Image 1 (cartoon, rainbow, N blue to C red):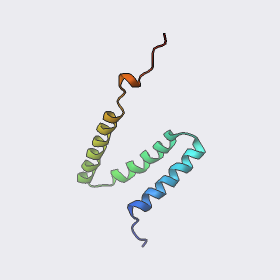
Image 2 (image 1 turned 180 degrees about the vertical axis):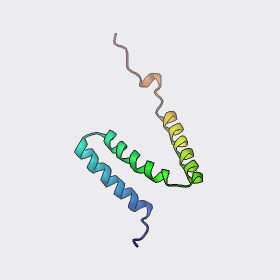
Image 3 (image 1 turned 90 degrees about the vertical axis):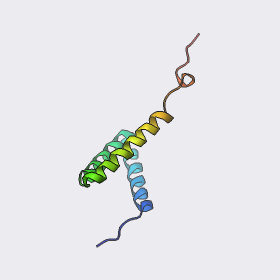
Image 4 (image 1 turned 45 degrees about the horizontal axis):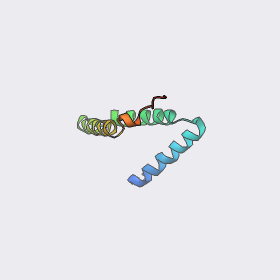
Length: 81
């Protein structure tokens, strides 16, 4: 039986896979697709209570992203005169 990987080891493995996928495809969309598939498999195997934890984490992340990356008028395209 192999030992359980640490957070750092998993993050490194995922980063290396992301970089490889990005180099081969040239886009982050393919990287996101790969991770969507991996996470879907993992979350589908979790007990319902843990799936609820994942849903809360995703909702928190979505809220944070919407707050941080909401364009302001100064960020929009400038009108030409």
